[in-house]
Length: 303
Ligand SMILES: Nc1nc2c(ncn2[C@@H]2O[C@H](COP(=O)(O)OP(=O)(O)OP(=O)(O)O)[C@@H](O)[C@H]2O)c(=O)[nH]1
Ligand SMILES: [Mg+2]
Ligand SMILES: [Zn+2]
Image (cartoon, rainbow, N blue to C red; front, side, top):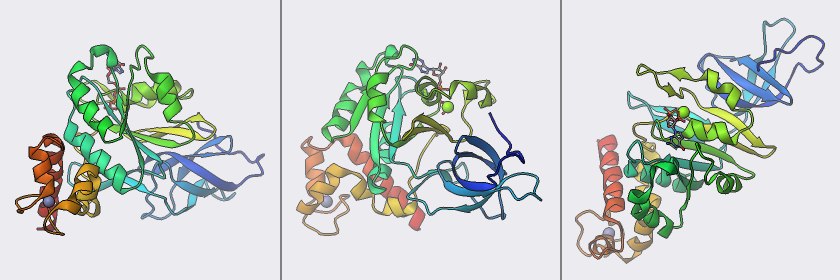
C-alpha cells in the first residue's frame, strides 16, 4: 500500500528506511507511511536498507530523498557483466538459503560465508524444502556445524523449522541470499505478516516462473526485518574481500600460523600446514578447493 502524503499532514519530511529500490525511485517507510520517493541527483544510488531523509516541498510533485546516512555495510553482487551491483545496506546477518532442489552449489555457500566473515556479519545456513529430503546434504552440513556455522532445516510449505528460524532472526536485520528457486520468497511469505500482499509485485521471468527482481525489506517485528533478494547464479565477493580470501575460511586461517612461510598462500609452497591438513582429512577438500578458486579469481582480477 503506497500512501502519498496529503496537505493535511504537517510532516513534509523526515527520516525513513528504504524498503526497496526501483532504479528511478525508492519505497521509503517513515513512521506509519510508505512513500514512493523520487531521487535527487543522477548519481544518488540508494539500496534496500538505507536510512534516508525524505522531503516533500509544497512546490514538488511528490516526495523525494534528500540525503542518505552513512552505511554500516553494503552487500554487493556481481552482475552478468561482471560489475559490482549493490543489493542491500545495513544488515546484521547473511542467511544463505539452500535446498535439495535446485542442487546446492556449496562453492557459492562458501563464498557467502567468507563474505559474512570478512564483513563481520552473522551468518546462517537455511536448508529449505526439507520435505524433499536432506540426507544427501548432511555431510556438508556437519562440516559447517564443525566450523560453528548455524544450520537450520525448514520447509516453508509445511512450516517445519520456522519457529527455530524466527528465534534466530530475532532483533536483527537478515538478508536472504542464495540460488534462484531455493524458496527465499516462500520463506519470507510465511515469516513476515505483511509479505503475502506483495506477492503480486513479483514478476515472471522468461520461463514463466515467479522470481524476485529487486531486494525487498519486510518487518518481522518492531526490531527485526528480513530482506528478500533476487537469486544468483554466482556470487563473487568484491576484490577487497577476495584479496583477504584466507581470512574468509576460518579453518585455513587458523592453521596458516603453522606454515613454514609467513606469506604462504597454501598452494604449492613447501611446509604448508594447510595442505598437510587437507591431505590428512582435517580440512575438507571441498572447502580447500573453494579457497583456491577464490585465490584464482583474485589473480584474474589483479592481472
Ligand atoms: N517442496 C517444497 N517446495 C518449496 C518449498 N518452499 C518453496 N518451494 C517451491 O520452490 C519454488 C521456488 O520458490 P521461491 O520462493 O520463488 O524461490 P526464490 O528463492 O525466491 O527464487 P528467486 O526469487 O528466483 O531467487 C516454488 O515453486 C515454491 O513453491 C518447500 O518448503 N518445499
Ligand atoms: Mg524470490
Ligand atoms: Zn600454507
